[in-house]
Image (spheres, rainbow, N blue to C red):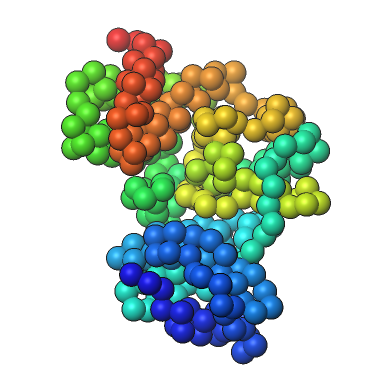
Amino acid sequence: MQAPAGALEESIRNAVGNGFRLADDPLPPVGGSGQVNGQDRRLFGKLMPAADAARLDAEADGLAAIAATGTIRTPAVIVRGEAGGVAWLVLEWLDLHPIADDAAAGRAAEALAAMHRIEGDRFGWHRDNFIGATPQANPESDNWSRFFALQRLRPQLERAAANGHRGELQKDGQRVVERLPALFLDQRPRPSLLHGDLWHGNIGALADGTPVIFDPACYHGDREADIAMSELFGGLPYAFYAGYRRQLPLSTDYETRKQLYNFYHILNHLNLFGRGYLSQACRMASQLRQALGR
């Protein structure tokens, strides 16, 4: 399946002005992302089969929600279009670099903390969305521990069981779901605006050090869930975490809740990518069960 170049060009032209013309460069493949080059400007595009268009709608919604806070930069949404069985999301092109030096890390921490100060009335979100390719339900709730147990962990455990991952993972995982409120007896998280999928690959910086986040899976939840995710796959520089703690200190038992929040993401990776994540998921479930008492 190929992207309908004419329809894509027209949708961009309608969004940015009649002068836009696609260059002769190849477009990203359907199911992929990359440069969408005009003759005089560069854009970024994600293309998917139309059956997956809801993922692009959810991403555009999240980017717009973050941008509306004015706290941290995101790529601007240019257009969401669809034709010929192909859906696309076209974004502003930004030349991004990893968060590598202390100055950029400090600015990123300050901006993320500012975003986390933006709160909703309840936990959840005004729509369901996706964590990667996995549907993520967001019915609003006044109870954070119940929301995380029923809308985050339980669906992932059910998917894992359907994928054949049963045994100790399910036994320990279900125990975690049942006992999860015990991790919040002395903690009352606020419904902060979250990026939702904040590993280090979804944050970068412009040449002048301006932090940028992208590929969100937004909802209102405990801000420590974003910080936990940022540590999961290699993490960000120490200056980022030190800077964030100066803005918004973490709870004294953050390390235990970090394990809980990242259990969700490891379960998601298990369900998306297979058995390579099984031992880590089982280990985390066992450790959490022990932390919660047998």
